Length: 564
Image (cartoon, rainbow, N blue to C red; front, side):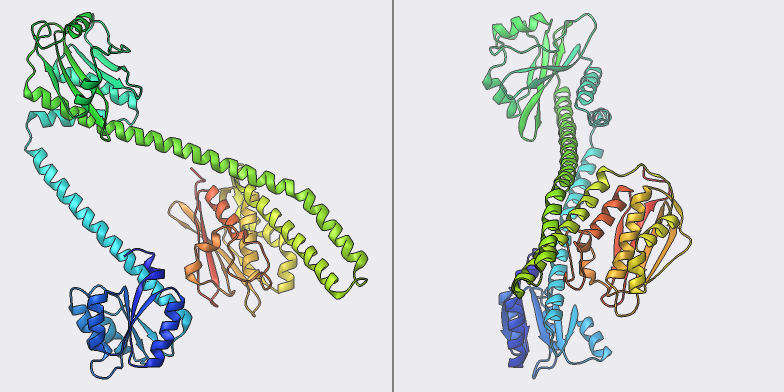
C-alpha cells in the first residue's frame, strides 16, 4: 500500500441502514475514494475476501451477525486480518469501545456522521496503514540483510591467512575517502604482502586510453607512472576480457611462447620478467587494472596470490565507489549552497527593485482616491479602494519578503545577547497593537545567549504578534519562558488564542502558507517562515504544540554555548 492510498483507496462500508450508506457514499466518493457496500456481516466477509479493500467502515448494531462478530472473523482470517477496521456506532459506553479495540478495531466514529471527521479519520488510518506496510517491508529487508551479513561473517571466520591479510589491508585502504590516498595505500600494501618488485594501478579513461595513476616500486627500477600502454600492447579485445573479469598471470615473459613480441619488448623497458594482472570493476564497468610485477627473476604466481589480489581489487572498488559518491555529494552540496545563496540574493534584489515602482503606483492611486472620491459613481470609488488596498498589501508582502531574504544574507555576527532585552524591544515595537488588543505579555528568567540581537528581537516580535493577531474573544495573554535542556536553551512562547489543528503544525512554517482567511486575519504568511529561518541560522529548531480553541505554544532552541 502506498501513501497515495490515503486519498484514492478502496473503502468497504458495512451498514444495514440505506440512509447511512448513501451519506457515506457521498462523503467518500466526493473525496476520491472507491466505495464498496455490504448490508450485513456475511456479505461484508465475502466482499472483504475477494475485493481486499484498504479500509473497512463497520456498523456495530446490525441484525444477525453484528459488527463485533464480523470484526472478529475479519481479524481471524489471514487474508483480511491486516485491513484496518473503524467502527460506526451511536454507542458511547466505554466498555463497548474497549471491546471493539480488543477485537482489533483501530478507531470509532460516532453517529450522527460528520463529513470532516469521517474523512480525517479515514485518511489518517489509511496513511498509518501505508506507513506500517512500509515499516514491515523495511524490517523484512533488514532481516534479510542481517541474515546475509550473518552468513558472510560466518564465512569470514572460516577463511585462512588470506582473509586476515585482506582484512588488514582493506582496513587501511578504506580508512580514507580520498581517491589518491586509497590508490597509494593500495599499491604500498599489496607490494608488501606479495613481496613484488613493483605494484601499479593503471587507470582506464573514457576515451579508450589509460595511464598509471599510483605506483610502489623497488629503488633503482624504472617507474611506470604516467606511461600510456600502446594499443598493440593493450588492444580493445583485452580491455573487454578484463571487463568480464579476466585475470592474467605471466610467469616468465622471456620464455612464454604465447606472449606477443611487442608485449615482451614493452615489458623489457621496465625490466618486467613476470606479472599478475586483475581488473578493478566499479558499478559494473572496468575502472582500471591492479598489476604486480616481478623484475628480479621469473615468478610462478600461486592461486592464493591471484585470489588475494582479486579480493584486494574488489575492496579497492568498494572504497573508490564510496569516495566517488562522497565527491559527488560534496559537489551537490556545494552546488545547492551556491543555488540557495543566489536564490536569496535574487529574492532580495527582486523585492528591493520592486519597491520604487510600487511606491509610485501606490502614491498615484492614493492621490486618485483623495482627488476623485465621491465625484465618480459608487463602483468607481470601490474600484479605486480595491486598487489602493491591493497595492498596500503588495508593499507589505515585498517588505516581508525582504525581511525573509535578509535573514541569511544580512544577519549580524553572534554576540552575548540578553533574551530579556530582546523581548522588551519586541514589546516596545508592538506597543500600539498590545494596547489596542488589551493584550498581556509576561516573561521571566530569560537567559543570555549567543545570538544576533536584531534577529532575536524579530523572532520574539513575530511570535508575540502571532499570539495577539490570532487571539480568541478573550484578551490575548502571551507568556514567555526558558529553561536549559542539556546543551541548548529551550524557549516557549504560549498564547491563549484560537489554536492550530495539529495536522498543520509543520505547514505553518512554510513561506506564504496561511490557514486563516485574509480578511479576519491580515498578513502575508511569511512571519513564521522568518522565525524558522532565524532559529535555524542560530543552530536551533522550532516547532508548535496546539489544538483548536486551546491556544498554542511555540518552542524553539538555541545552543547554550553558541552555534558550533
